[in-house]
Every structure is written in C-alpha cells, then in structure tokens.
Length: 594
Image 1 (cartoon, rainbow, N blue to C red):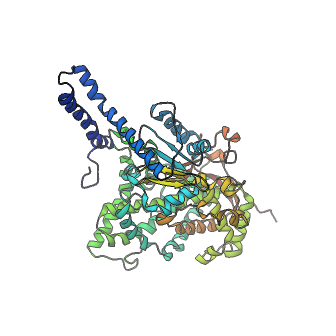
Image 2 (cartoon, one colour; image 1 turned 60 degrees about the horizontal axis):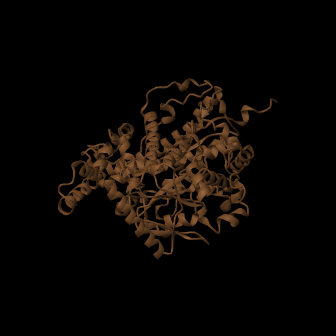
Image 3 (cartoon, rainbow, N blue to C red; image 1 turned 120 degrees about the vertical axis):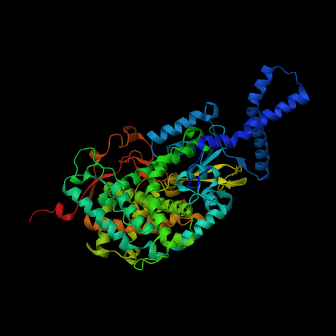
C-alpha cells in the first residue's frame, strides 16, 4: 500500500505478513471447527493449543505433499523427468544459502551456479527456505525456449517484480503482459537509428573524459577507468534521456587511488551527481540480495525498506526534471531549438501525464543505457591493457580508418571488423548482464538436445547464466576462457556460432531483446576516441583499493581465475570490484629523443 506520492505506508516485512495472514489464521480456525464439531469439544487445552500452533505447518506439509504428487503425475504425462535437485544438509538448505552468500562476497562472479552445474549437469534445481524450487540452467536450448520459443510462458513473474519494484517500479524491465506491452510501445518508437547513433552527443562527453584522464596521467596519477566511463555513460545518457547537462566529469571529484598519488581535482566533497551514482549502484546490489533470498526477503526488511534512502537520492535527481517537463507540456511550451521529442523524456510526456510511470521508465532505460555500456567499456579496456598485441592491432585499424583526429561516423564503425570482434569477445567473456531470471507461468518442459525433457512446475523461478554459457568449452572450444577476438573472424565462427546462434546472448533474445545497437555504437565510438589519443594502456594494481585484487587462491583456480588481474563481480550488471585502475600514455609521451 502506497501514498499518493508513491511512499509505502507499511514496510515490506509488514506487508508480507499481511499477505500470508490468511494462511496462518485459516488452518487453526478450520482445525478448531473440526475438533469442536467432529472430535471432542472437551480436548485438553494444552493439546488443543499445540494442535492450533502446529496447524499452519501441518497445512504447509499437506499442501506441498499434494503438490508434489500433482507435479509427478504432470511430469509423467508430459514425458519429462524432474530437474536434479541440489539439497543442503540443514533444514531449508540454509547451509546452501549461506554458501551462496559467502561465494558472492569472496569468490569469482557466478561461482555458486558454476559449482552446482559442474556437479549436477547443465540444469539443476535448488529449494531454499521451503519456498518454490529455483532452477538454474546454462543449456542454450533451454535459454532459447525461455526467451523465444516459449516466451509467453516465461514471465518476469511476481517474485522478481516485487523484489525490484522499489527501484524499477512497473517499468519495461519489471513488468509482464499488457503492462510490459504498454511500456514497450511508449519507449521503442523513440529508439530510431539516428537517435541511437548520436555521435555528436558521444563526442562531447568522450572528449571531456579523455581530457580529464590526460590531466591525471600528466600529474603521474592512475585513474579509476571504470569510474570515468560510468561518468561518460551517465553524461551521455542524461543528455539523451533527459535533455540536461549533468557534467559529472567536471562536477564530481575523482576516486583517490590507494597509492596516494592524486591530481588536484581529487578532493572529496558532497555532490548530487556522485550521490546519485553511489545510490544507483547500492540499490542494485540490494535488489540482487533480495533475489538470492527469494520470496522471504521481506522478513529482513520488517522495520523499513532498505532501498528507501538510496531511492530518495535517485528521486531527488529525477523528479524535478520530470516535474518541469510535465509543467512545460501543460503550459504548451516547446523549445524550438530542441524540438518536442528530441529526448526520451520529451517523448514520454507526450504519451502520458503519469509522473510515476515516466520516472520508472527513465530509471529502467538508464540502467540499460548507462550501466551495461559502462560495464562493456570497462572490460574491453581491461582486455586491451592485458593484451598489448590486441591493442596495437585495434589501434592500427582505427588509424587506418579515421586517422588520429577525425570524428568517426556510423559508416566508419561498420567498416571496422576487428573493433567489432574485440567488442564481441568482451561481451562473450564479460557479458554486462551475467545472469537473468524468468518465472514459469504454467507447467512446462525444457528439452535437452539428445537428452531428456525436464519438467518445470508452474511458479518455478528459472535463472539462466549467460556468463557460464559464454565460457562453456563444449560450446566455444578448448580455448573458451581465452580472450581472442580472432574467433569472430576465423573459422571458429562457422564451427561454433553459426550452427547455434543462441550460444551468444549479450543482449538477450526474443521479444524482450535489448536495444544492443545503442551500446555497440557508444562503446565503439569511445574506444575509437580512446585509441586515437593513447597507444599504451597498463594496469595499475598499486592503485587498487585494499581487498579489491583477486585473492591469491585464484592462482590455482579453474576458468579465468588464474588469468584475471581484477575481480569481476555483479549486481544487476557486471563490474570490477574496487574499480579498474589504469595508466595510459600517448606516442609523444614515450617517443625516443631526436
């Protein structure tokens, strides 16, 4: 229940108890009627009390037993088998839950799913805290069914929507059915090719970031590149979405490196833009924590919504912009220089007067337009720092196409095959959204090629790991953990990808496919401008915050653990723990004297 301003009257925990109250009250009342009318009205008070207190548990046990029988019959009817179930040693598999939470903090991104699928196969089920089964799959055919061939049956679902609603509202990424179609219909027409290829926008903000980086490098300081590209994508997204200049590059202080070497611009101050970015990341982390806990997460927020403080910061940033746009619409004011629908905000206010819908939509698109692009830029440049030969080959293609000064065009970007290969390889090994979930609206099956069909009961939450699928040696070959852009150019494309295109899904697929071309264009443009200015990029591990480098135990670990020099983690999107600290130099900085 919410006020007219959208603030919740009750905490998530109180609302949860109100929702389950009937299931707590009805069993004792029903048992009381049976005892009084059918058994014995003179039953001892102590025994009667024990029966009443235990009746909800008896009801739950009976219900789940009955449901198990129904599911078993339905599975046989469909010619399917149950998904292998991973069970913990403690009641409610609470030991598994603790292990997952520990791995999220201390291990490589995706470790819990990696361990389960390695032990049980490419599809596995878990049942935590007596809630519905959660299914994890890394099988491409299953993911194809979820996203495309059985799309109507695999919805976001009430579990996901409820956990993310405090941040995403009922926006396009947090709605189903007619509501999703409505949000899709009011946003998609805006994203024309001209708008998602606004290179003038990209150039203004890329130039500011590169100049800021040069100033820091000239002062001998490393920079947190992840922070810098997050500023770039925030500034370009704010102009694209809101039509405003945030100028986070100039207005917000830079993070201070662990080695203490800073430029004069690094002093810390309170800043709305910095607070917005911090609140944005922290809210996503909390939503992911809710998802891991499942439907019982509200019990940990009994005394208040733990996202409320950060959401107040986000609303303080967005609400005045939305309010002004609606006021201008009512006053029929149109900026002749900008036009009615030059921004997504201007487009949305022509579709609806509901400020809450507009705000939710903007925050949804901001995650897609800012965080995913910043993630891809972070890990693409991380790879260039790791592999200088790839950097030099990419830079040569850029110089051959646009030289050292000219602004690239859309056609220039289309010609650069190696640039596309570098970006694709980044998206393969470091997909910006490493995991996603859907919920089965009705009972169904997931078929495995040359294998069994697995039964998925209605209400099951199905998580699919794009990160693990993208690195599977069975799908990508024995070098699947290596960063090698050549795989997108040589015979491996025909060998692996062409026969099974669903093994590469950086932007999802099916009706909910993301507007990935915007990210490709923005990432391409920034990398071109970056390598027009710098020809050497090196990691600066001494500048990383304490505890942010990969643990020493990874040296003997599997997958990419022994390779990594940063710590990949994820909330809704993938990021480098503690940032990506780099140093860069241009040709003039290290040219030999004449």
